[in-house]
Length: 142
Image 1: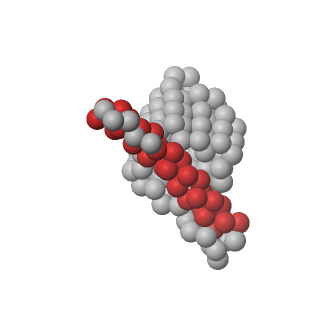
Image 2: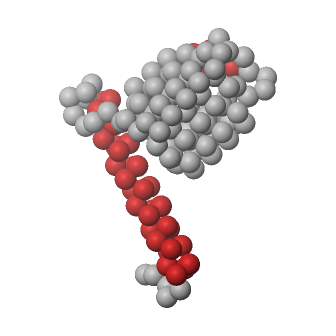
């Protein structure tokens, strides 16, 4: 329900829009997980290039082979997410949580991993990086 004042109506609309986006994202993830588990026979591969996914809850999501090139994943929850072989080129992970995320074969060339939390050298070593990958202090490119 919208309030009578213009600013409150806009705020209420943005909240509803945010809820709708969360529902849509869950549906897209479910379709992608079906695509992965059926080896491409069912569902649909996730392709969210340049998507605005700040603060997205992708905890435990199977995003194997997803195309998230240029996605804005700052402050996203990617704990235990399977990002194996995902296209993450030029993605922005500023302050995202990557605890126990599978980055094996993930393409992180040009990605911004500044200030991510719970990222390990082992995860970086299993991913594809380049000199354009921005890593947090204490981690090095493979």
